[in-house]
Length: 105
Image (cartoon, one colour):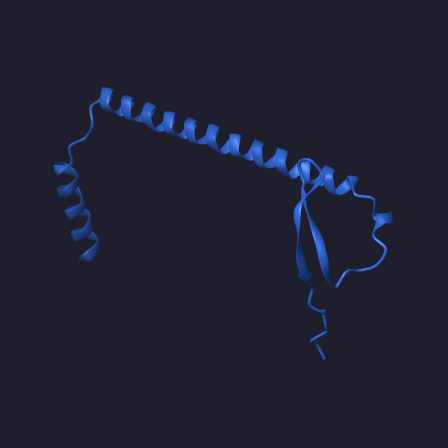
C-alpha cells in the first residue's frame, strides 16, 4: 500500500537526520531574530524617509496658488526650477503635451 510505504520510508529518513543540540538551536534562533530585527529597522527607516519626502511633496503642492494657473499649457518653454530653493535654474526646457482624445466609441 503506497501510504504505508511512504510513512515507513519517511520514518527511516528521519532516523538519519542529525538534529541540532539545544545550544545550536538557541544560537541559530537568536541569529534569525537578530536578522529580522535588523531588517525591520532598515525597512522602518526607509519608510520614515519616504514618508517625510512624500509629506514635503504634498506640502509643496498645497503651497502652489491655483489662481496663478489661468489656462492649460499644451506646449512652450518652461523654466527649470530648483525645487529646494524655488529659484529658476539656468536654462529652460521645451515641452509639448499631446492632445488627449477619447478613444472609446
